[in-house]
Image (cartoon, rainbow, N blue to C red; front, side):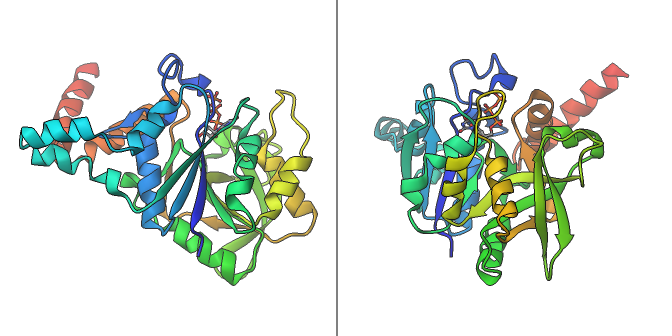
Length: 295
Ligand code: UTP
């Protein structure tokens, strides 16, 4: 079983400015909850017990969100606001939270390296703090990845999904050959290729499991043109050294919602709001009226 996860949340989130000027993009709401709460709930539902957030400046609200707030609880109790108290039940999640800082935002690879001591000699999950899997984050992909990691004695398992060919330049893209069972063997991974360069349309989907080998690889990665240490380069090194790097496709209902840019953030918010058990129907009516006006 994989018990520990590193959740990098230290990025600047520049594509979401000005919303992210003084608050982390991982704390932006999608319908009722901040994005990172969906991520944490998904991890806990998949048996993760220890979560390390790799944070940076302006990220204190993430720590506050997962801490209890006795004053707020007291006020809600005094007002007998049982329904609102129920909304704070996530504070009791069965997980231990740890925090460390990435002092300079030098890329995802560097952020993951900040979790080396936390992971120790054990395999570790890396879950991007800005990516939700599945509507309401009920995905069990992480459990399937963990099983695959153990069954296949892999060095790395990457969750992947097919993206439209015209979008491959936004993602880490895999070159794969069939493997037995549910997985594909990754022979090469390319960060943000052009459509012509892309060997497939299978994109990294924000969840990875790594053996501790990954940390040696990241330490050897040279910074790119933007002075960032790319996690993809470290995975490519694993492939070049003949280590078993496998890709596992997400199920159709486990779509990855990447919140890192406005079009995808807007779409995700609307989809989750429409699925809200209390206000979804009402919102659908307003949205249909709005859309009809625009015709
Ligand atoms: P992104 O690749 O979306 O980068 O990060 P970013 O810096 O947050 O966003 P832009 O490009 O400026 O808009 C994917 C995940 O990796 C984390 C981010 O917080 C996000 O959850 N990350 C990225 C780090 O923790 N540190 C980094 O140096 C870069």
